[in-house]
Image (cartoon, rainbow, N blue to C red; front, side):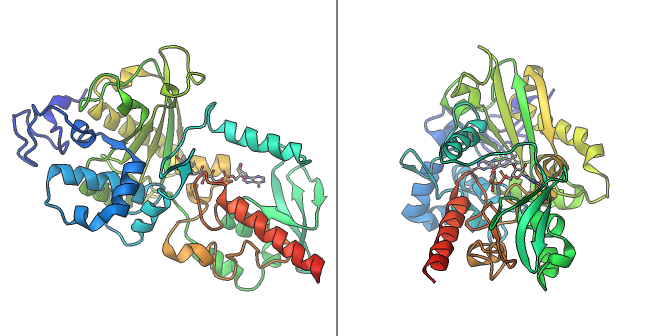
Amino acid sequence: MTDASKYCLGCMEESGGIAVCPHCGYPQDRKPDSVLHLTPGLILHNRYLAGRVLGDGMPKYLNSPDTPLFKKGQALFAFDSIVGTWASPEMPGTGYVLLHHLFGEVNGRKGAWGHALGGMGAITQAMAAAASEAGARIRLEAPVQRVLVDSGRAVGVRLESGEELHAPLIVANVGPKLLFTRLVAREDLPEGLERRMAQYRTGSASFRMNLALSGLPRFAAHPGPGPHLASGIILAPSIDWMDRAYTDSRTHGWSRAPVLELLIPSLLDDSLAPPGAHVMSVFAQHFAPTLPDGRPWEAARVAAVETILETIERFAPGFRTLVVGQLALSPADLEERFGLVDGDIFHGQMGLDQLWAARPFPGAGDHRMPLNGLWLCGSGAHPGGGVTGLPGRNAARAILKARRRALDA
Ligand SMILES: Cc1cc2nc3c(=O)[nH]c(=O)nc-3n(C[C@H](O)[C@H](O)[C@H](O)COP(=O)(O)OP(=O)(O)OC[C@H]3O[C@@H](n4cnc5c(N)ncnc54)[C@H](O)[C@@H]3O)c2cc1C
């Protein structure tokens, strides 16, 4: 087991347990007096605060002295600039990813993120109930095998069972790469689309674990219960840490010191675990979509899990003894289970060249795909990934508008 007391509370580098950290000067006996001081190394994830600071004057913060506190502040912002994005926060374009993760609101609180009572399935159940009430018929366990095309127009789908369904409009919620490389036959692709899809960048480098815990973890930086445990807990104390994790992932597939986000939703929702027990999700960043040595993820999953659990153990000694059940999903598992090509949680990278009018590609930013009758409504369309409902809403509006125009003509 790792001896966490050797690590500095400020920078989480090995400090040898002496009073003042030789790396960052953080006094180890310092009493926490604010959120950021309270949890150096264990950064409380307050997107509302982050949004305000960004709006109030980011340059002031970025130009501030290179103190441990400011490093923590930078790390606080930097996590959202690389979440679901295979990049270092030092790389151009990550500023947009930060903005993307701040532009929502929950119950009127701008920049905040919410927890769905009953778990994420509660959201799709609510959507299903609303759709059924409006007359929709939902078919489950009915994977689409092919989009049927007749004379350059999408006219229906064939299910894996062989059943064919025909409709005047086909609205696809799968990612564009899945749609155009596997569901639409090659001979039905409009000219140039095959090349475009070969260039479309996927791969968010995400590794997911769901854990059942017999109790709450105790973080060395802030042992004991408290509101920090019910927040997003980011294990990534500095931008350098994130930069190294990214570089490692390019050479080795993942880092020995990865960037992790932990959530314990059972602290907010007691329907998720028996009394005293908890569930935790671990959202691990920079786990390469395909491994550099050519190994399949199947052969590497156990080693990746070991790295993740050891990293949490380093921040929260004794953590591993709490784990009573686990599910691990590598990028390959995310593709296999959910059809996320290259395990991309956003259906395609959110670089500036794949956003706005260029999402999924120039000429198709209005949800209308270059195959008549085919529309895109999932997160491969603008404004991209996240549980926002926005790509679907925008697609519905675009389709209704096109229909009104057709009726008026
Ligand atoms: C590990 C992980 C963590 C995440 N964390 C967050 C977070 O904290 N906050 C947040 O906002 N977002 C998060 N996201 C992203 C968010 O889940 C997605 O952006 C969002 O679900 C996209 O919704 P969607 O409807 O566009 O696509 P999806 O949710 O991907 O839905 C596509 C559906 O199509 C189905 N499908 C695939 N192939 C076929 C086929 N051939 N026939 C029929 N159906 C098919 C899939 O099974 C799936 O149900 C996370 C995603 C992952 C994977």
